[in-house]
Image (tube, rainbow, N blue to C red; front, side, top):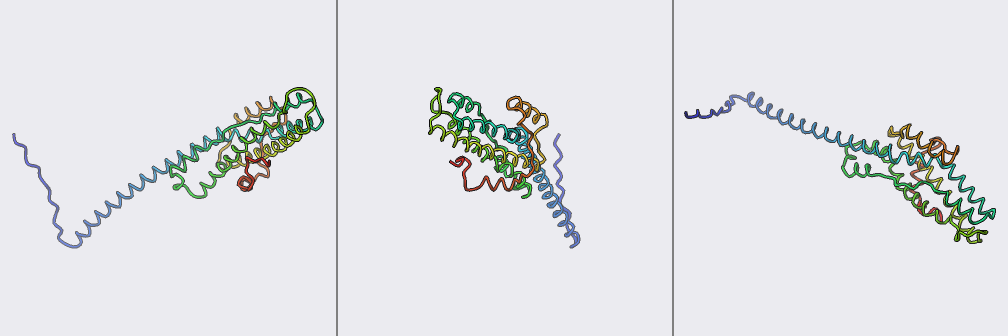
Amino acid sequence: EREAPMEIHKPNPIHNFREFLKEVGIIVLGVLIALGAEQTVEALHWRAKVHEAEQAMRIELRDDDGPQAFTRAAIEACLDHQLDTIQAAVEGGRDRRAIAALADAYTPPTRTWDAEAWRTAVASDAASHTSADRMVTWSKPYRLLPVLEATNLAENSERIELQPTRRAGGPLSGAEQDRMLSAVARLREANHMMAGWSRATLLGLSRNKIAVARDNQARILAGFRNRYGSCVVAPSFSGVDPTDQLRDAAGDRPATSLSR
């Protein structure tokens, strides 16, 4: 059998201006609906991208950088006490081997301070779809991480200067005493900078409604109290101003110099 030819419906002829406006209105309405749907889809897409970026930053700060900052703020007094003990031993003329043992025991944590989630968020253009105030709030803890990492690395290198030239017994030479006392002063400054910037970082986390999990805090405190004793205390935000900390971090003195 032969197929019936397909019928083509011709548009109805427009008889008057009112019908013309009606047809135009239908076309314009269709275009507006299409544009609105496209904008809605685009808005939902960027909302999801922003949520994904914020979630990545939240996890990075809560589970990585946050615990590290919590640790450094918690053990500040303990590291100070160790440096006081080393200084007293050097100034008191104790045996070189005893001083070397004290220096060996001074091991502040050395960590990487990660900002991959922040860099990814900025590179993905999610920042342009977030309010300026919100991006400033997110940026505050991240702006402190580079100076924390630089100071932490310099601090680790500075520990070498705590070591006597020789391990044999006997008193330190005058040159050894001067070098080690200078190292103690620089390490004390680094410890205070690390603790201050760490507290500001934790405050920056709180402004983003992020906190180190309580069980993680308890684990950190218990672990370091086993090592250092009662000098380990939960960090306090009293007197901490992230703006001042950011200004100090961006000051003229490079963190890596430790005032040599």
